[in-house]
Length: 227
Image (tube, rainbow, N blue to C red; front, side, top):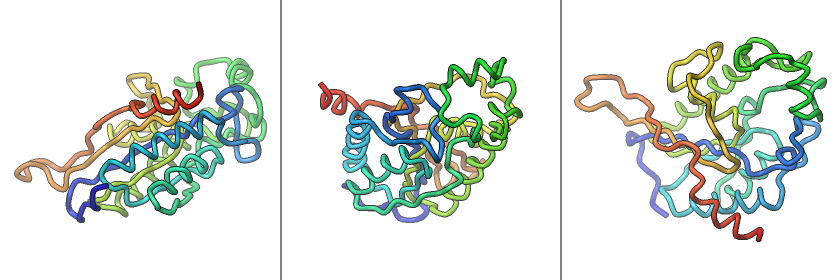
């Protein structure tokens, strides 16, 4: 494993979606009261991601959503990298509310009667958090965490929505507006953004650059382990 980059060099923000969880198999909404964590495949996926990160430039901090499936994924990675995991409440998925907890996505979306992508200001169920609020919350958290670790490589373990919120943040698209493209975010995939310490010749402000989206190249090992 390479040494930690000194402050002032390129900052990198790695965002991983949690490994496969039981709620992914059942297609149910698993909030704070009903998430039952990772499947065997999900644990294998997380171990494969951990092995990959162990052989890449050093990650210096790990932050995770408080949902059990994200904490379990981050814990597997943290043990492999000998790093503690900090749970950050604002990295959680949207709070869909008690009325949505345990329901299937099919049932919830049918009751919503519309395309959620065009109604970002509306919660999917009564008492829930709309996308505009949850994405803005995650965007603020990502901004704060990146600012707290300049010139470092940090890992965020979250959800599909975490990756999408980062696109809103770095592309400058308000949470109230839909992204111009649909994004696939696989379990235990890795999306990486980096930011140079300064722009060439100092002519323009440094910007975040997308290095890779939805990278699952490390998961062949996890799939093989379940055969």
